[in-house]
Structure formats: C-alpha cells, structure tokens
Image (cartoon, one colour):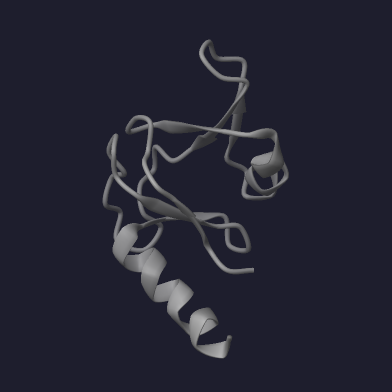
Length: 87
C-alpha cells in the first residue's frame, strides 16, 4: 500500500483522523482514543521513522501503514515515488 499523505499535523504529538483511517492506525499501532476534541487520533510523537525529524503542527507527513512508520514529507515522497512510477 502506498504511504498515506496527511496535509497538516494538528500538533507535534497527534493528528485527528476520521473513522475511515482507524483500521490503518490500529494496524500501525498508532491509534489513540479517549481525548477531548476528536474521537480518533493518529499518534506521531516519535517523529519520522527514517531520520527522526519531529512532525510539528502544520507539517505535512505520511503514514506507511505497511511498516507502521510515520514519515516526514521528504521521506514519505521518496517512499511513494516507486509506487507512482508503476502507475
């Protein structure tokens, strides 16, 4: 599966997601619930799985649901590029 792009992180720790993404977040072990403000969140407080760069509020980022890694914009684009070339 191609990494999923998120336009903007809500905070440095988590981003609210809709119900349609919860299955992927669970598979990646990144689903967080029980917080005020939204029903479901994708946790990304550990930063990019390749370089460790923190995902800050307002940053775009990616979720590689196959590996469970959150990726910064640069590494997410790199990982997506081979899938784009196949299409």
